[in-house]
Image (cartoon, rainbow over all chains, first blue to last red; front, side, top):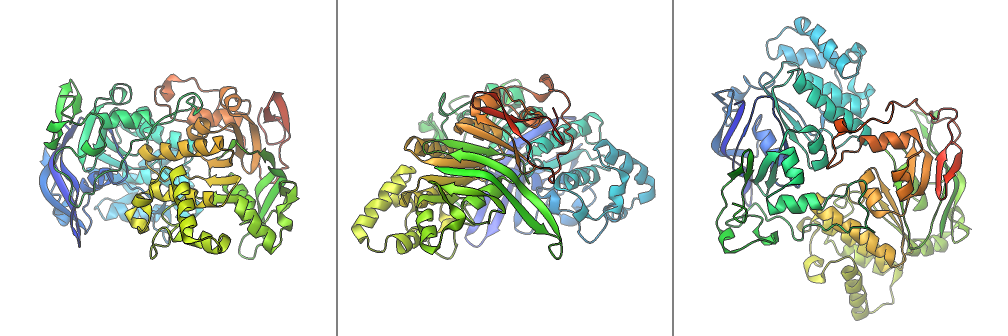
Amino acid sequence: MSLRVDDLKVYYRTLRGDVQALDGVTFEIADGEIMGLAGESGCGKSTLGKSLIRLDGRMRHVGGSVTLDGKQLPLGDDRAMNAFRFKSVSIVPQYAMSALNPTRKVGRIAEELLESRGIHFDGVRPELVRRLELVGLSKDVLGMFPIELSGGMKQRTVMVLSTLLNPSLLIADEVTSALDVSSQRAVAEMLVEFRERSYVKSMVFITHDLAILYQAADTILVMYAGRLAEKASSDAVISRPKHPYTQLLVSSLPEVGVRYADRRLEGIPGKPPSLLEPPQGCRFRDRCPLAFAKCAEQPPFVEVEPGHRVACWAVT
Amino acid sequence: MLTLDGVSKVYRIGAFGGKSLQAVRGVSFDLRPGEIVSLIGESGSGKSTIGRMILRLDRVTSGTISFDGGDIAQLGRTGTKAYYREVQGVFQDPFSSYNPVFKADRVFAMIRGAYFPGVGNDEWHEKLCASLASVGLGPGEVLNRYPHQLSGGQLQRLLIARALLLDIRILVADEVISMLDASTRIDVLNLLADLKSRGLGILFITHDLSLGNYVSDRTLILHRGAVVEMGATEKVFGDPRHAYTRMLLASVPHLHERWRDRKRNGDLALPPASRDDPAPVLVEVDTDHLAALPGKGEPS
């Protein structure tokens, strides 16, 4: 078992109280698994991704644990986490385009990054060049400033840099969202290729775009308002979703071939609850067509079929 | 009716404006009432520049944009004001379209001040409520609120309601739903389709092919500032003739079909079309379906 997250709770500190952005999530990711993490904005998907590598100043680790390859990650201890970052957990951040220092050449950025981890750059350089070539970049990129690269090139550079030490876990946060359709496909296929070549063992692929996840991810985890709604193989989530939220979400997506004149799609009425004082019980209750009395209690996240977990009283 | 005839836009770039960039090259099309036209292209294709030129936020370098037969570049001060009464735009980021210091409904008060100074309070309130109802909002849920108290979908619909207060005939919708969540974006898309059936002409600018396909009657595919294919939506998507259109369609992630199960339509790599070439010539390949001829810089 590569990654195990156990009842993880991370809250944001604000003047008006704690925002319960991540409220008790439990799941596992197997070796070699690419897990898609989907949900609407504010559902806690990026918070979950960030929690696995670095809690920023406003985030507070309230409870639960994360175990990677048998070792527990010291989430709350920023210093102690340094031993894991880049080497066993790495991230391609949401704004990879602005993740590169504009005053340094790319080669210099790589060098400083490695030396900060006590690794000699010259030993890794041939591998770095090989991987840059794999993603279609020449070694000249190392002598260029980030401003000389296009958005897609920067994205690929950051992907190569962050996976250079073959981390066990890669967190890819909205890596395809700012790209054009044609480069989106290339980047998504590249992430799968990295897994095939064992550059990364397993991956959390965060995006709001379910269609991309269907293409690239093995499993999809759907979050709603800080809690888990459903996890299953990508086929099951798209074709046979069980949670009413997933069902409504998937049916609201327009696909090429679906036209307004033939079939009018419907959105989900209402909006997610505030996480400052979230309601008791199922958080989707107010928008759910299947809600009944029992939903006032929090539904457990249980396995209803092999490999298919759902948190919903109407299904379990 | 809005007509674009050979519209081009050249931007001066470089430190002293010494270089030029052909952002839009010879684009011609019509936008009729009761019709949604999708303008689809990747970043840098010039799709937003076309929208901005229609809204007179950017000047046309050559060619003409005419509305009901009159060139919009020739409009004077009063002419411009009358033009905006009939042609309005809504943009990508609903959050930055509002001043966070003021309540969101200030956008309505500004329209009232500029266009309806003589209208009484009761009459105005009635008009406002009718406009809000047509975008699916109740006055109680949105009026007297600050922008941060409303969702992105609500803010975007408020901006459409603002445009509807003026009896507009043309709406330029530039990436209006790309910042909205999946569960609310479809509502805004359906709203555009409903407005169309009430006789509004809508230019729907997007990079997302499935959204354009869902809502529009006609589609234009832009590549490096020039139209490479245009026609009835079902023809452009069902029978794409230009290599660039095919490449785009092959890259779209589908929900029930995997990329790896789909045969690639030839090589996805395109020879670069230079921005300095003249706009490709469009020929009729079918009724209401035009595509660029293979020629200089244009792959077959």
